[in-house]
Amino acid sequence: MARWGMVIDLDRCTGCQACVVTCKAENNVPVVTPREAQAGRLMLWMTVIPEVEGEFPRVRARFTPRPCMQCDHPPCVKVCPVQAMTKSPEGTVSHVFARCIGCRFCVQACPYGVTYFNWQAPTWPKDLRESLNPDFAIRPTGVVEMCDFCHHRLQHAREEARAEERDVRGEGEYVPACVQACPARALIFGDLDDPNTAASNLAHSPRAFRMLEDLGTSPKVYYLKEG
Amino acid sequence: MQSGVMRTMRMSGLLLLAVTVSVLLLGNRPAVAGEQPIAFNHKAHVSKGLDCAICHRYVREQAFATLPTLQTCLMCHSAKMSDNPEEAKIREFAKRGEALRWQRLYALSPDAAAYFSHRRHVTFGNIACATCHGPMAERTTPPTRALVRFDMDFCVNCHQQKKVSTACVACHR
Image 1 (tube, rainbow over the protein chains, first blue to last red):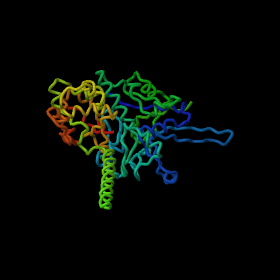
Image 2: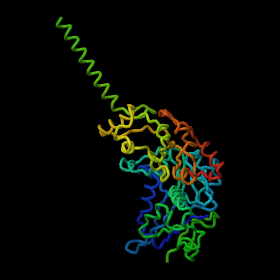
Image 3: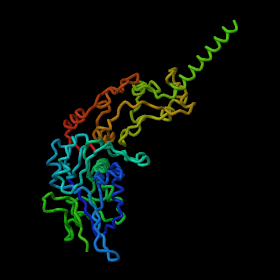
Image 4: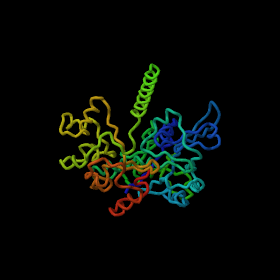
């Protein structure tokens, strides 16, 4: 069985935020007003964390794309009292909105801050509302939401594979929207247990590291160091 | 005398207005839930050996089985086949250039946030239509509500019996 993971090459990321925009559109992530954003209620399942070093003209920016880390030992799943946070047999961590009681234990437990609480009913400007993705649920008020490696895309890929009586290919067939959108090909996605995929090779490269690795969460998102 | 005629005329004018308004209002209203544009007889069609997939075209190939369009009916009914007034309605719809607006009886609640694929169940799982849709093939009149009431227990029971995945994210999204 596949173990899906992502490798993010920090050398390649240009900070264009195509992944951020794509994620918002793909997963019907609500848009908040600037005032709410300042109150810390901005929802970005995928975000790019900028770090600026030095002063103009000798300035250097680093960009760190940050999806859900899809931990192998996810703290959010451990604390969820109603099993709304689940880890699938293939290792992807997903959240079932219909089960969530909005206790926000997962928000507290996640060391990466990737879970978001819906403080109010989701809103979109008119143009965006007309182009919501029908493949993905719209979350009601009072539940948590987070990146699940575009699980609905895996459901589709699985069905296509089933039609041809085989397993989902370890590479290329199922990719989250952010990976598909990255123009710099900084995001690489695939089966980490399949030695033939680019993702598993890069995850074993000496450049690879994981965010807050010492916490023991064993994320399935690997970063490749710059340089 | 004259005033009596005037009154009658005024009354009939009002009546005409009332009828026109009500026709306009009711005419544009969608049919009541469960009321179909044509009283389709499933049994008559199935007993003649027609397969479900002739009208519900994508039931084996796609997630949505789809409801038939007027063109599907006209494949056979463009010329008169019987004296049934319901059959004549098809050609009337065609003459008016109006589409058939079937009332959908089966739909997953958006709150369920679940993915259901007909292909997965019918083609891969070999599950008979009647398992979820009940004795639809026996019906001579359109039902007014779904013949089988399905909730999550209904799905999970079958998934457990057939030993297929009951992981939340196998269906929910």
